[in-house]
Image 1 (cartoon, rainbow, N blue to C red):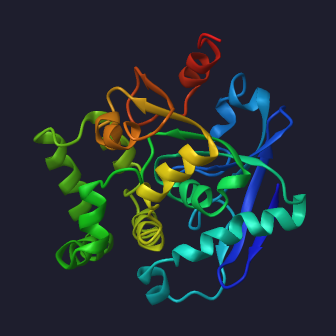
Image 2: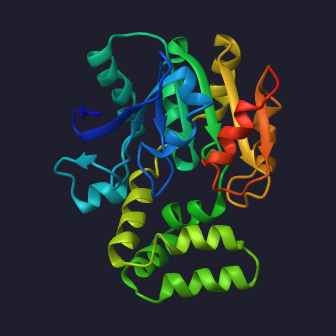
Length: 272
């Protein structure tokens, strides 16, 4: 493990694991850490040496001197480039691969835009960033949504009550309810959700640019979706997939909670 010192941002912690030789930077989903992908030991980790990045408000990464107003304004998109620039200072400029799950895909895809000639492969699982999830967009970009998000963060009962009602009308299923409820059952957890989503609010890839770069540089792209995922389903990403020259796309019998041993087994058993 180690740290990337990002000027103007803070200290970014990363975990190292995997028995493979090829370097891969990995970006986890909400509520996890850079260790999230350790369950893929017989598939991805057999081929790659993973540098799993902790998001801020997760693991050991720490913002340096940022005020609450700065956090709520969002991390400038341009600063993401420094993640790989600082990694190169430690390990040397070389070809790398990227892996990400859920909200972590936004950072991985921005790095792919910034360094297309140095990206060997990209593996994305239930990725955010390739389509607009209206729920997140409402909470972090629309004035009414932003106000509601702030109020719900301070309230002990509002967010849990909303989740229960969303489940009751089948807007979310039991799996998403359990994931979300476990992240809002204390004031600190609610505040971490609030700060995390606002900090990352500006980090959206340019999908038109990405399609051109992936096709031009022939970057190997693997997309994995949960068949029962209601948050980031394959159906929302079909317009993006259809414009790629080539992509490996899998829809597995899981929900949004994808990074589990069952996925490792699925990937190991893919036809060669």
